[in-house]
Amino acid sequence: MRLVGSAEMREIDRIAIAELGIPSLTLMDRAGRAVAEAATAVAGPRGRFVVVAGGGNNGGDGYVVARVLRSAGRDARVVALVPAGRLSGDARAVREQAERAGVPIDDGGELAPIDAGVGDVVVDAIFGTGLSRAPEGAFAEAIARIEAARVAGARVVAVDVPSGLSADTGRPLGPCVRADRTVTFAFQKRGLVLHPGPAWAGEVTVADIGIPPEAARRVPVAAELLTEAEARLLVPPRAPDAHKGDAGRLLVIAGSPGKTGAAHLALTGALRGGAGLVTLAARAEVLPVALAGRPEAMSVALPGAGPLARADLQALLAAADGVDALAIGPGIPRGPETAELLAALLERAGLPTVLDADALNAFAEAGLPPGARDVPVVVTPHPGEMARLCGISIEAVQSDRIGLARARARAWNATVVLKGARTVVADPEGPPAVIPTGNPGLATGGTGDVLAGLVGALLAGGLAPAAAARAAAWVHGRAGDLAAARLGQRGLLAGDLGEAIGAVWAEWRR
Image 1 (spheres, rainbow, N blue to C red):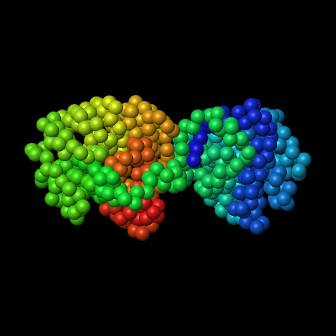
Image 2 (cartoon, rainbow, N blue to C red):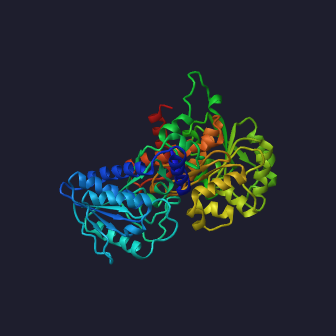
């Protein structure tokens, strides 16, 4: 499912109107009718409607809403924040239509309190997708009055995006409308998917207003929302005569004293992910605890002690001989030579690899990009690890998750899984994907280790890095949702994800 930002939507609109001949007033009328239908659905049987209208096309949509509701015999009026003489051409035309339909329009100077309460609906038609700075003056005051009406019991329906919310990042630019429902047009907007946007948008409906598919085809896709149907297509069913070699051989390099659980959880993700043979490579003292309760896994004891270093290269290459993929990082002992060792291992082994946790921290500490030249790599940082890898703040990471993941994927020539609320998966070639599954219950130690093992299993099974990362992120999030439904978000443990991953495969018949 395509996700658009403000610039893309503006260009798609332009092509539809200027090049394909769709009248802009027709699009505005269809948009307003879709919002009027949504507003009617959430109103009480005698509920009144107050449309708060700005001066651009979003305000024009609002005037259509009021006209349609008034024509249906409902009590609808407009609070106009911009005088008629300052409206855009289309907005002025539909305002005149609303006036002829008998819609009361309040142009009156100082903004009065919005008279709306239980059963009533306030329609936010102040700003559209193009807002790029904080609302000020009368606009900020109007947003505050809408919130006061909501607190008094009115329902709020936003036109396209809640006013004050960035359509690109999902972050409030300043004062922001908190909607119960948002009706957005033609395509889902990135800001309505990326947190905290969903908390401000409420229930989101995408309304088809008749923009021709050709208009969208002429604008490159910049981001997608990975649907379940698309995720399923990434993981083919096993052949009836498949054997464990066909399912893939994975080497997991994980664990150290005090972090044996990380290795155990990575093994859980790998085994539940469907790898045919899984081997753990770790220091000898790690193996008994990491393998406890995991009789399905094999092991290789790495000689020596302490952090992984150049001296471990030959033992790791020997362990990697004959496997199909590597999963490296959860809880590994790292030191000043660890990043150099891992880069050499990737280069020499040449295998598809997922790098997680302490592997990423090792590269960050060494100031090296994660991965190796011409080796297919998936990196799975959480925001803190991404900040360390990029030398920026966590706030900077979170401010543009899609843009940063896309840029780093190209710079590192790797598939990037930027974990967090609405995980983003980006690869060097295609558009990034936002993963809609998952919940705050996954914010507990070890869930990322399970994901690393799951990605590794899909790599070992022959999926390309981008497909393995997308599918694993979707399945991991869905497993978290199933586990939280059974145990609650607070009660969810990383160890619960193994069985839940199996339940996802059962849903998919995989």
